[in-house]
Length: 273
Image (cartoon, rainbow, N blue to C red; front, side, top):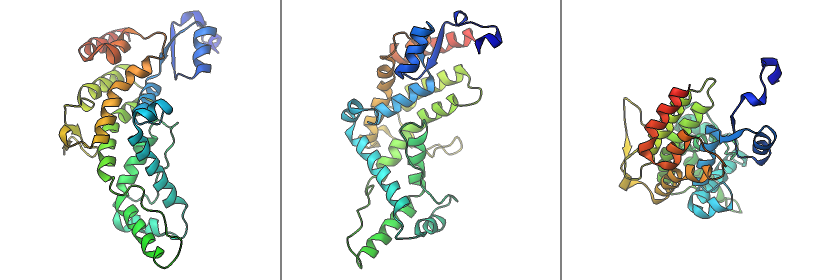
């Protein structure tokens, strides 16, 4: 295919991809290219690592978040699969929530934006979900065995705060998947998330916050779970970059060396375009 554009592998210095061994080995060993993380894959790996869903090591580092995700998945499964209530959930969505959607979104670890979208939909449909479980409980008084308890009972604050932590990184992943992503824009977005949204001493923008109606969560008010996710997500790029044999100057400046180097890193990237 390169020949169609009068190009050869020697015309390239590096390539980006995820850290999958097959693709990475092909780029490094077969094509002799310097390997770098693709930004979308890097931020996705960082998100999974901080949330305890990137293997046994990350689950051990944040078992509470892994448990919350498991409870969310269980809730989504129960609402989707249990048919004893017929179209009750859809009707509850219409009467108790503003958005027109009447279904929950499943979570997949392989999809870049799946976690934030699943969390956001659960919170959006929270009144309908709680009402659905209340109806199931009342039905259980006349039947057996009783239905399972609401897996996310008393976890609303955790869901709100965790989504608020994850949303800025989700925005970086969204920009990365644009038709014509601008490298400098991605770098600046990631840098601002690191020094502001992921700074444990700074207030956190609520996920519903807008420019016209800014809303903040004081750092001291964050739930312990959300505070842990915030800390781990800030540290995660260091862990994800540790798997790479090479890292470019601007990437090291942004994710490894420290916050003060990042503006210069962004400038270098802009100059290279």
